[in-house]
Amino acid sequence: MVQKVVWLLAVSMLAGCARRPEKGLRVLLAKQKTGVIHLPAGVITISTELVLAPGAHDLEIVGSGTLLKAADGFHGRALLVVDGARNLRLREFSVDGGRDTNFGAPLEMAPPENAFRVWYADNGLLFDHVEGLEIVDMRFANVKNFPILVSRSSGVKITGATVEDSGSLNARRRNNLSGGILIEEGSTRFEVRDSVFRRIAGNALWTHSLFTSPRLQDGVFAGNRFDTIGRDAIQVGHATRVRVEDNVGTRVGFPVDLIDAENGGTPVAIDTAGNVDASVYQRNRFDEVNGKCFDLDGFHDGAVRRNECVNRKRPEDYPFGHFGIVMNNTNPSAHSQNIEISENLIDGMKYGGLFLMGSGHRVIGNRFVHLNTAGCHENAAKFTCIYKRDEPKMLESGIYLGRGVARTEQTRGNVIRDNVIGGHKMGQRCIAAGPGVSLEANEVGPNDCSDFDAAR
Image 1 (cartoon, rainbow, N blue to C red):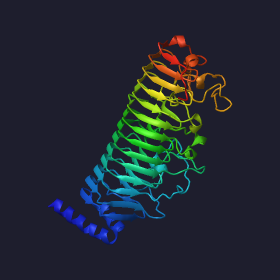
Image 2: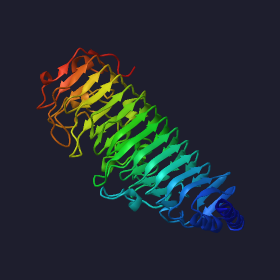
Image 3: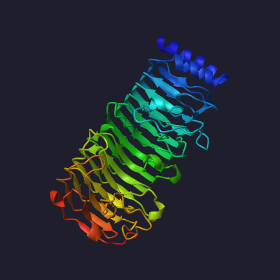
Image 4: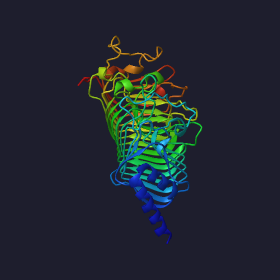
């Protein structure tokens, strides 16, 4: 009897949708807490944010050729806001955020102490305090900030999403991090699989590193595809037990004009921030990266294995070109230690293959080839070849052992063997140590070092 009443209520309200689509849908979402909502076909223009009924549970929202489109002048937290729901499933409809071709009004990047759900408005879908969320086969385009933003939630599965042409810019016309799928604020048990990201202004798929929040836990980013990303294709921030595997991408750090150079926003294929451990980045393939392939800032006690990152163009074509893999220790709770880097292909980097710091790392069986395409230091008149004046060997080395970046680390007890290291002057500059670091304090060799043609 209860199910019949819910069904009759939905039929009545959807009849209202046909006459006044936005009003009918707004009333339906506000009242129906369980069951199935079948959205009507066609475009539904949304003038103010839709809000799901408080306490909604075991609810499915299904499209039938449905497009939720932001009206001109729309402003709200998101087109659809969900707070405190349980066991929610959305599938097979589309969202258009109404962002114009000029990216709309400028918005500065959120200050580091802010949760993004508070700072960024005009998102596609916003979920807060949700237990059990599944998003299947949905399309998002022209969203001003985040097409999907998930905060303080658990049991999240996003599959088969397509995200295009989204994100806003700051007053200098640079990206402000926005444009992709974001999971933040201690969320747990999350997955994003088999989704496509194209022409994203900021980061495409990531967890937000907020130092004051609990770390995110138990995540999977797998089988996703990326094309033309302005900042990071993937970032794992302030998390534990995350797997990033079998993702494919191209043109990371393009278009160049959107790169947030003023705030140090060097693009990265797979980035790390905050304190990240017990995580694995494996079998990912990227090409044409105008920045770093892997940034392991705060990454420790984890693995980077069997990945590929290949650049084929001239060094001039990568103005933000960098090392292939870079370690760092910005977060005061994290020390660079116990990372396995094995069987990766890093090919065609503007500078070196690996910047290593810390202890207990195992760098084994990698191919770092066609390195130092900038030709440092012989080509110093054309390219930047000195990062720190007291460390002149850094950018010209295949593997460089440094004493730290944000903080000093003891770089010792690392194993570096069975690697192929080739490129400009790599026969002489294969593996080098910076001031305060002793190669003898590490197990180095055997490695195959050679000077083959960096330009192919």
